[in-house]
Structure formats: structure tokens, C-alpha cells
Length: 103
Image (cartoon, rainbow, N blue to C red):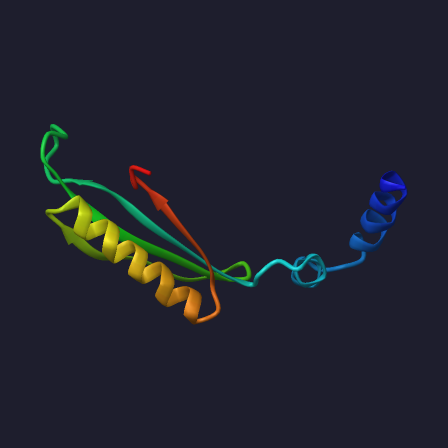
């Protein structure tokens, strides 16, 4: 039964655009990744701060790629990253919090 369903799904998918296929499979068109990561301040990679960056897509179109803040404190950067993640979820984005979260 599963093999037959897969064949039908693939046959139907061949005639669809990537946008139609995303809608058909229930994938979100609006995706936002929030990164908490080290931002090195020197060439020797010995001094760093914590950056919080956002990459947003609407389908295949890049809407934004920006660093929203740089913090001395890892805990503060992590809290800010979580807040941004919740903000973009409330705006209808499928949101993923990534990076050095320590969890």
C-alpha cells in the first residue's frame, strides 16, 4: 500500500511547480532561521562575542539576511534569539532557532 501511494505521489508531483508542490505537501512558504553564534573580533580567533542573526525566506525568495545584535553575554544572546524566534512565529513564519544554544 505504501509503495503504491508513493508512486501516485511522485507521478502527481512531476507536473507541479516547486511552489505548488510545497503547498501540496503542506510545507510553509515562509521560513525563518535564527542563529546564536560566536562572532570573532580578531584574526587569531581568540576574542569573540555572541551574535544573533536572522535569515528569512518566502518560498525560494530571500527576504532578509542580517545580524540583529551582538552581545557580550551568551545568556542574553540566547534570550534575544528565543524572543526573535517567537516574534517571527507570530508573524506566520516556520521558525528554527539554531547555533550554539548549549541545550
